[in-house]
Length: 159
Figure 1 (cartoon, rainbow, N blue to C red):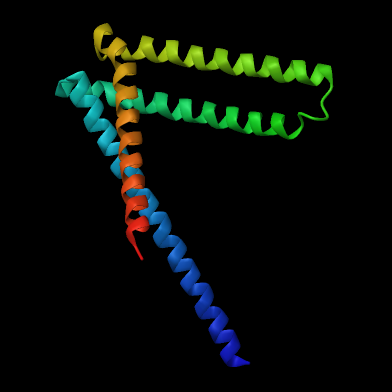
Figure 2 (cartoon, rainbow, N blue to C red):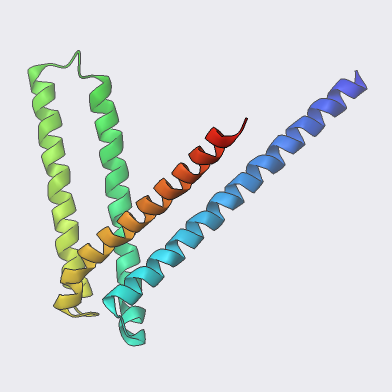
């Protein structure tokens, strides 16, 4: 009996440690990706030290708000999909209107960001920012595809 309790205790401890290590690994990856994004944007926008010091706090705050909006939108879409078979016409109208409201919130957020960040960097750099963000995402997607194709090729060569 004592051995079973000891075994269960050890198993729970191992699971807890493993989970904590996975979380730390995820945090390190997240930090690494953020650092790469900062370097990519700073370099491609050719931000001076002074511009970067003003720009990044504004940009990070904007990203946090944008992430919260996206989460709200995902949650809303999940709920709407779950009930799509059984909703009434009025409920469907409510869903459509809520979607439009969320798009308006996103546009308001973008306008507020441009207003605020225009005090830190030039309008030329603000205009270029969206393109640079897309280039960064594209480069990350390409890296993932290469890594996937490389690992897929490794598996197919094994006997």
